[in-house]
Image 1 (cartoon, rainbow, N blue to C red):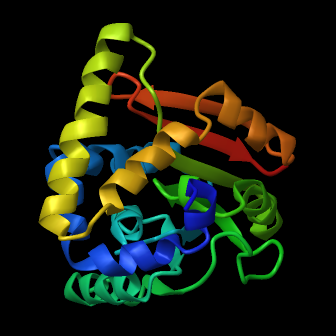
Image 2: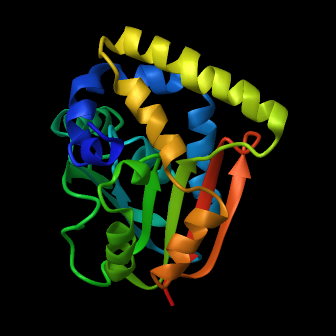
Length: 235
C-alpha cells in the first residue's frame, strides 16, 4: 500500500497507537516537542481576543498550550481519531480547561465550520498526513476571519550535511524501531517517518501556502532545521 493511499485512513493508525502516543512523542523527541509547541504562543495574531481552531489535534497538546495565553478565549480541536480525541478530552477535564477548550471528531481537510469563524488555525505535525493538504489550506483560508492567521508546525529535513546524516540515522532506523516496539504496532512509526521525507518542506511548502492565497507567508526553522513553523495571514 502506498503512502498516499494510507493517508486516507491514517486515523486508524492513530487509534491503534493512541494509548502510547503522548509518552512516545516526548520520549522519542527527548522532550523537545514541548519546546516546539510553545513557539505557537510567540506567533499569535495581535488581537485582544483570539478564537482558535486546531486541526489534527490528537490528544490536545496544542490546545492545552494555547489556552495558557489570556487573549485566547476559545480553542476548538478536531481530529479523525476517536481514541485520540477521547484521551485529549480526559486531559482537558483533568486540567480544568473545559470552559476554554473543546475537542471533537472532525476532518482537517474538509473542515466542518462556516466561513470567517476563527482568528487562528493551527496544525502541529499533522498536515503531512492529510489526504489533500492543498484542499485543507484552501478551507483554512475560508474559515479564518479577515486578519486571521495560520500557523503550521511540521517536520523538515536539516540542510547541514552532518546534522542530516545524524538525523537520518536516528529517524530512519532507531526511532521507528523503538516506536514500533513500544507502541506494539507493526509499522506505525515506520509509516509516520516515511511521510516526513515524502512531504514538501521549507520554501517548497511555503509555495503551497502562497498558492492558496495567504499573505505575509514565512517559515522559521528550529532545532537544526528538524522542524519548521510556517505562518500566513488572511487579508
